[in-house]
Length: 353
Ligand SMILES: NC(=O)c1ccc[n+]([C@@H]2O[C@H](COP(=O)([O-])OP(=O)(O)OC[C@H]3O[C@@H](n4cnc5c(N)ncnc54)[C@H](O)[C@@H]3O)[C@@H](O)[C@H]2O)c1
Image (tube, rainbow, N blue to C red; front, top):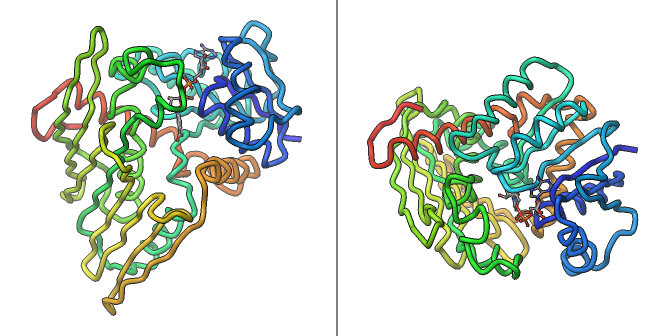
């Protein structure tokens, strides 16, 4: 049976554990904080998924089993991810899944991790940008492959979501100042936390022929709250290697939530609305005939992580290469490059990525 170790028993740790159990995999969860393990068992897991799954084994970091895992997931805050990833690499799992964002801006340990990763061939790395492997995004990719909208001229992606939802799920936190979320230097703020949008943009730009991003102009709304400092809104404009232009907006102030992408082609458009209907995601498109089609991809949030595990399973079975997966390590590194370039050059136009 596939053996999975998940580091971090918080919100994402619960999702990943449940998704891995749904695959029938054997799950071990590790957290530095004993209270987090208790909260997972007694509160988060049963309230989200109905009841606690007795087969999940829980460990504090000092007791954590090492070695022999097929998959290790690092679902901790971004500011401790690189060091944990370096340790996990030594355990030689077949796949190392690193949550989003990969890291925090200017993280020296990320460089060490990337060097160690390149020196070996065994461990494959994927990122936790689950939306990129959702059925609805697969449909968008299929439409692009069929050239339904002809050559693509521009792409917009928005992940705009008030972070009250995150704080409701973490009632022990008083606000952003109590967690990495309130500190851009720890990988928080809208640019880090909602980096699903940056990730989707680079993925859709690649598969739609817009090409790789080359230049970015960013505008951030920076907030200060005691010691906390974060961007509540991050707007990015891109120019690609092919001279195409597009846009990303991420914020932690919008409600109701808007998670959306739109591709304009010479013959029509494709629009993706995550959670756009009570049943799930919507994909709208029109091609040459001008008729607007609307398809619904039924899902609940836990299904996104199940889709991610199904994708990881394909990599384990060598049906998909980690390097060419939408969740590739390179895609996570690219997102970090944009976030770093933006913080380094706030307010400047056309920064080389
Ligand atoms: N892919 C997604 O859609 C998605 C969804 C939610 C969160 N996330 C990401 O997952 C990460 C964690 O978010 P969260 O909401 O689960 O946070 P959380 O605070 O709920 O959980 C993080 C857990 O990590 C533990 N931890 C911290 N340092 C540790 C260490 N050194 N060793 C072991 N455990 C450690 C903490 O005790 C805590 O229980 C963030 O980067 C977030 O952006 C991704």
